[in-house]
Length: 371
Image (cartoon, rainbow, N blue to C red; front, side, top):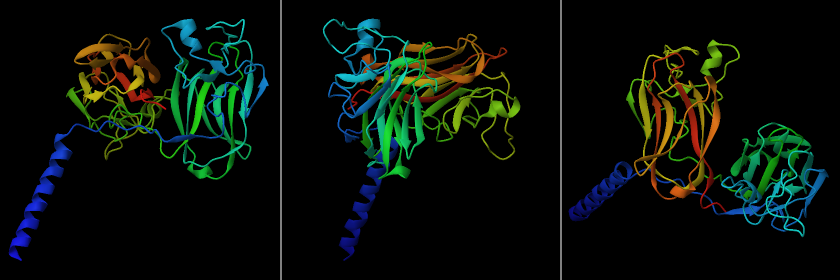
């Protein structure tokens, strides 16, 4: 009996040591993506090459769907990167028909709406591809019981990016998709593709906490004093100056002018001013997406920069073009570095007026192994 207890004790110790090794010695797991997604209804991915199960209103979608990467044919190296052979683009005018040629466009001269057939929401998430204009006049919408319950806009960029709606509250209810273009101005177009139901959304983060939503700097390493008492909680600029906003995503973001984390003794709107400098560097991660998107604001002076390192070399960098607290999206195309080791570095090396940087929400726009 004593021998049995002894062996169980040894086995327990070995199991514990192995699990400890796995937790503390292994690099952070690369987030997985889902291959298990089903069409919402036949032709919700436009792969019939026509508008079966969709109705077009107005003129914007009369010559749809678009065949192939028409953006690439016209504006290489820019690309829409559609899924499959067909997608919808209200700027485009190429279906592979006689008399057409790749790259043809109808531009932003027409408006309209494309509405899907009614379908039943059967999965807790809906995923799709979207790009085009960033105004509410160019949008993809989910309509349930006659009401718009979800809405996503483009990012003034042609690359179709994967977005997800949480639709758990609407399970087993009838719905329709609306693809809307009511804008004739610059970026007055909408692109969409590949509407599917997902059991869970793909993890688009570069690595755990690349969006700072853990409320700390786990998976990042700070040097110097600029990133002490970060990340910042909530829209801190708006709490001290009316009309100013951070435009952050979620709850937390990096702002080297800010000094508020919601901790005892702190008050919304608190600042540290532009008196500190330093760097914040991410843990290493593998490139697994076509493009990386993040938000950037703060000062435009020298010494304020975000860098992407691949195999130890700077391959992308971005600075602000103007002084502004509200962060704006930045997109880096990175597919050429698939599978390589990378790191993000945020730099605040300025103590001048506007000598601070605001950053948030590093994530992939598309995964390289997308459906």
